[in-house]
Image (tube, rainbow, N blue to C red; front, side):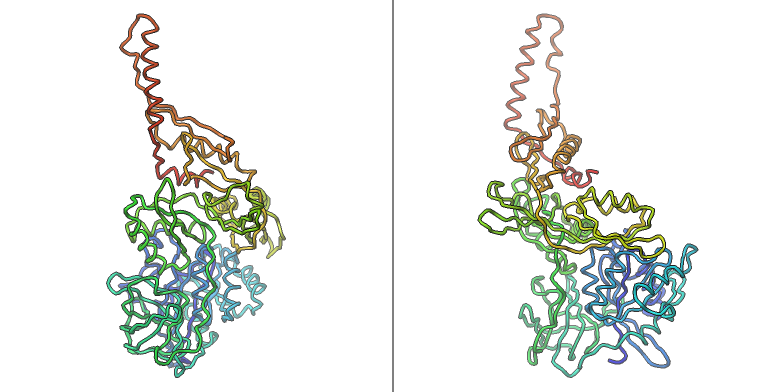
Length: 595
């Protein structure tokens, strides 16, 4: 055990975590030339296309220092705020962390929040300044920022470059010398923490675990504590670039177990594995429960695919434990699921993964957040979608979730960023100078306001220099109303939204205008209306496609033409009564991108 080191790599988006991980793997000869490609751990097509890490990836390296062999277990983590749950799980399986800071950008919001998460778990932090080969690097300035943040000595900061391989040897030595070996007793009863799992269509569910105490051998009868189910360990092993089977693994190690589990409900991330004959006294305390921020309905395009969609989401949940879902039904879309996501990027990625990995074509409704509704009888209801809102006559007050947001930016953009936050009903809590021309703004913002386009607008205002991080900060009373969209007097429940009173009229107008562009013309007039309760606040009309019925009348009395037009008018009226309007899928998506 003295020769094992478990560590993860944490950083802000695009600070070069995955590239630096490549150099470590190359230096320790874990990955050979034929497998070597940029961001070798990002094995999902989606990750390679977008250039972001979505999943944490665990891999084991062997390293020789002063004639001694060490085993290093590395976990590469995502940097985007929407995947922070991945990071929290990786941190729980490690004793140390490499904190990577881009020498051209300095400390950013996600750097700070990931660092606090690591410090809470008592991890040993090794600061690394990356991208030192760039001409725009500012090593002295960034070094001062790191010393202020961590309180470390300047000589403890390693200067490195993921592109050229500078400082890789120093990093590996620091991992061996500075990160403590895992604690645990190989002779004690078995205790393993499951930190990730994946579905394989041939072998069932593969669970990744870290052993805190005890030893597990191939063929052992093991029990998953949370579900109480028992299995044989058909295969155990370590995670190299591929899975490598072994006969036994003892305390401190990270590995995988295959035991022929077929149903995804039986494996929970954060669960403990133990022996049936000699169980441990208590389960390892897992990670905190995930709190979804954004809710949206996910419906199959064909209603027959409902069960397929259920199994696809269950399999996806194995690999992404921050996804939550429950069945629901809608008048317009039939049966589907109400899914909880950590943010808009997370929602987009899940939708994309359902399409690519499971071939599921889905319709997603307008995303919204969960509100607390207090009735006049003092009952508390949690409302996730507008159709769940009780009659306004019965409601005493509605409370909406707030977040505490930290925005780090250059001083040049402060004015515009403040305007953006105040437009979103934000409240400035404090502002601090971090260094010369960088500032941290702390705002309290309603979550419902930042769900749609806040992040994109923040990036465009600040030319990409502002970084944004947030955490939930309680509920506050708010003046919310339900905005309905009616087509020919019929409400379309998938387009309803709960919205703050001040924004309702402008949003209603914009939605009507957008739908007018997107809904194809029919044989009859279609009225698109936005309504609050019984009051119509906006209206657009899509004119009917008409045939010129008077073309055959040339000359003659006007009454002949009028007779034909009246006849056409009656037909259109009858059509309107029985005709129904199909709302195309892109109309649902366009509502999200109104700005």
